[in-house]
Length: 335
Image (cartoon, rainbow, N blue to C red):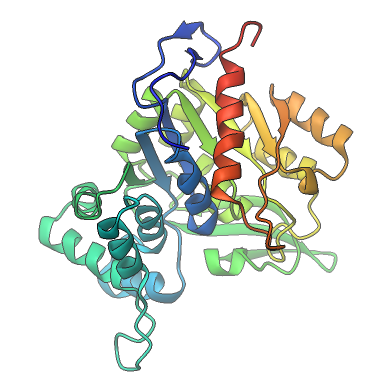
C-alpha cells in the first residue's frame, strides 16, 4: 500500500464533506511506546500528513535517567515514534536502527538508547523541544512530525483497588503494573501546559487516532492535559479508537474491551468517537462492545489486524487496510 491521491471525500467531525487532501488525510495519532509505533507504521502507508502526539510521563530506564539528571522531557517514546516514521529506504532504515541502538557494554552509557542521547543533545543545543524533534525528523527523512503532548514532564498517578483497599500508585512504570484494578488516573502537575503545536495539529486534523497501547499510561493520559483535551473535544476531526489485540498483563489485566471504552468515557466525559476498531480475536462480548461504542457515538469496525506469527502484535499492512476502511466508510453517504 502506498499513499494515494484518490482517497474519497472525507467528512470532518460530522459537519459535512470536505475535499480530500492530496497525499491522504491529515491524521494525528495519540499514544506512546510500541502501541503508537504500530499505528504510525500503518498510517504512514495511507498518508503523508501524519503527526504523532506522544506521552511524556516515562520514568524508567534510559528515559527516566535522562529526565532526572537533565530535567528534560523523557525522550524514549518520542524516539520510538520517530523511528516508526523513518523513510523506508536504506537511509531511513539505517537511522531507525541507530535510533533504537542501546548500549550494553557497561559503564555510564549502559542501558541508554542512542536516539535518546541524540534527541537530548539537540534539545540542549537548540533550547527548544519541538525544534529539536523537527531536526531529528529531518535527519531521518521521517514521514510525519513527532510532538510531545505537554511542554513539561509529567508524573502519572493512579488510584488502584487492591485486596479490598484503595491505594495510590505513582509513576508510569508502576502504573503499568499496578497489581490491582485502576479506578482513577491523574497527572502531576494537575494542569500541565499542552504543547501548542500538538493542539494546533489536533484542531487541523481530518482524523484523530487513539490507541492501541497501554490504555491508561499511554492512551488515556492524553485526556488529562487540559489544553489537549479541549482540542480533542472541539476539533472537527473524526475520532477513531483502536483497541488492543488482547488484555495486557499489567494495567488492564482482566478488563474487557467494553470496559476499556467505559474507562475512556469516565476520563473524558462528553468526548464523541466516530469509530472503534477491533480485531476479531479481541472482541469478547460483542453485544457489550457494540453498546459501549454506541454510548460514545461510535460504530464498531471489526477487521483482522493481528500478525500471523501468533504474537499479540499488529501487522502494519493489515492495520493500514483496517484504517483505510474506517476512513473511507466515514465518507460514504449516510455516515
